[in-house]
Length: 306
Image (cartoon, rainbow, N blue to C red; front, side):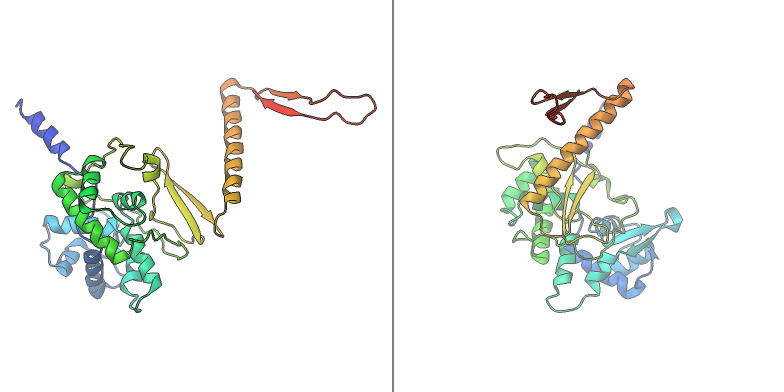
């Protein structure tokens, strides 16, 4: 009995963050196989197992479904005995676009490749192309707490996805299409236990970018309609913050946003003070020069809000 907690601790330590079980190319093949039989309709998981040549209770089926959802290619409808699977709009745009060298399909592939959290973080770390296998493996093990065998598999999939989605030249998403976010169900609810725990390992500032930089999500899921220029970051609590611009953002636009945010922060602090004390904050007005009788209105100088 005394050994049981130790075994449980070891099992927990060996877990890795969520990561797709298959590459994006394989996921697209699964999506096409599903579409060939079910079109745009939903079907039970057992039907997907037949289309993908898995046994109904196999771990491969469970992890493949989780990977499809991670890439944003599939969602759940219903639960329990009524649970069914359906291809997303993103999956349909990839599968049904057969145009040679389609730029739109290329962008949809990039969206899918960058949908899994770890994938988006890795490519935000190396926007001009992934590093060597050894460096990437080291990063996944030390910075993202992957078990070494799982890190090897993840490196292989990351490299394959980079080649398929052409992510090696710092390609960014234009976010001007109307792809909807179909992921209205719980993410990764079928991921095997060995891949079910996320991690927030400490950051080595000498070797990698800061955590704030790593949290820039290059390809996070977008809701339609979106504007031509979209930036997305995660706050310290993991919530998504999105900035949308109608035109290419300029330095002046960021300066405006900075001033606006500062004003919003001051307003929030004033509301917080009013809530806590029950009265409005004190406003102190300091004239820059004394008023002169008969010389017109007094000039108002600095305004301090206590």
